[in-house]
Image 1: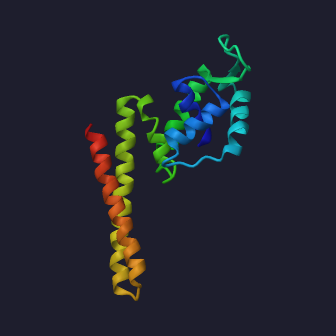
Image 2: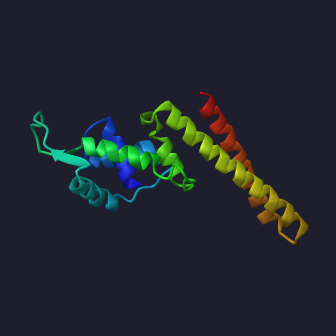
Image 3: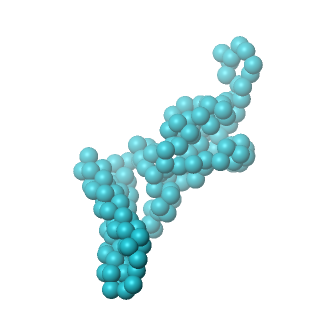
Length: 168
């Protein structure tokens, strides 16, 4: 997922490693945590595959910093990573990161992926309702019941949010 984030940010503009690190925290840090120790190894892997390239900007007059930019191959890899798993349900932690770069997808692809995510959450909500019914019949403590209710409320809110995105 770090590679998706790096390529997505480099689609916006070329950046040196420290700037990329700041942008990862600033733009994606609210919903996704990155291990900064993994940033440079990921950049090296992407460079080795030809997805990014290093260069030294001509306009730099002070200490020369290596700047990274996405390549044509990186553009293709980015779109592949962004829609990867589109035929199955995305993991909970990966959806927000992918959504952050949805602007790069065709409208019909965005709509299809949002509807698929909504369907997954509706199934999850149904499962939560069944769990709650069973938990009420058993000897489940109030904290566990509260946790199930909270999960259901969060899922309902997410479905409503997706409805807003779908209709936009």
